[in-house]
Image (cartoon, rainbow, N blue to C red):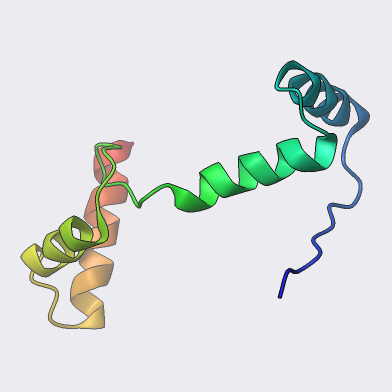
Length: 85
């Protein structure tokens, strides 16, 4: 069963850009928003290098990290954050 979504307090300038985009794509505002949501929801997860991974690839990558406990995962996350700074 379809669900109704609502976005409150959308800034006028964003709404104007979305309406322009919808017109360029020959869609209603609702149609454009649905296309944006559908595209975003269909994107696969991505790795640290911003390469898109399939679910199977993602699972293999997680398993390759050898996480054996929650503390291990914390160490991996901290190291990743430190690398990005």
